[in-house]
Length: 419
Image (cartoon, rainbow, N blue to C red; front, side):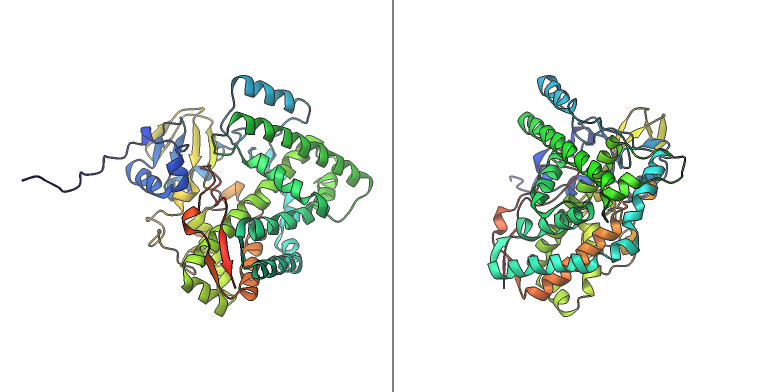
């Protein structure tokens, strides 16, 4: 008699796992679960160590002197003629300076303190009326259109307009802001074609020249915006003001963190609302439900799937010896679905207990400064969407595809039908 039972799945081999695998980038969670269960600290085929348990990721975040943020540019490197071309483009601009994301204390502490004034709860709270005005207008446009791409019609323009206003960028330059942000993000956690790398380098140079000019304008004619705050920033009379290169590095990080991540969070939540009618019904019935949706969305979707760390000295994490110079990826997405910390982690449960225990904003000295703004934008967006729209459904369920990155995860497009 022939045995027709299915063959057992082969054991998961961390050494054969690559985060650049397109199948993984479209659905990373099965591999993350296998890594957590097999080897929560594992050397992968890409030469990077992945940390996938919440406890161990938190331990590494608490040891910045060993797990350094001075990892350089968070992207896969170019080589050969492409690298030479990119270096030639970069030589026409300002050097890349480690500031907040890619620096360690005490230097990182200085930058953080200088920038944090723009992201206090009070400062962010003062922006709420403007955020709601933008969100309500975009929601109204969606309702009038009937069928539209939620990404380009709502999730992109909301954070771009918000961050553009914070930086004092005029309305007509906002498309450039989005384009430059895409140029920064395109190589993060992705195996990017050479021609796109070169195009992105040209875009970064264009960004530098524009904002260097804007910095000079604000030195001469200050305004109530973040760029003015940066050119005036100092913590003491004897402290040297930020250089143009330092300011450009900070603005670059604010651009990416201020819109790429919020765009992906809003898109993921819209996808859930369009596929889970009970979630949409609950939001329509109670605007306060948006807070639970936003927080659980951060845990469940985790737009910034992880972040690099560079090991400064031989160390042990989770019983695994890591050599000096090892490149480590702290997988926030995997940590946020760790069953040792979260009950039913694969279920989307707005209002769950310990809701803010997720690592979507990092933790410790590098906890995201923009967290209050991201939360406010998301809650306001959901509430204004629910006020303007009575129903939301997917217009093309079979045509959904995620961006090709293992660090920034979000849908490329989300066609929806609204009424």
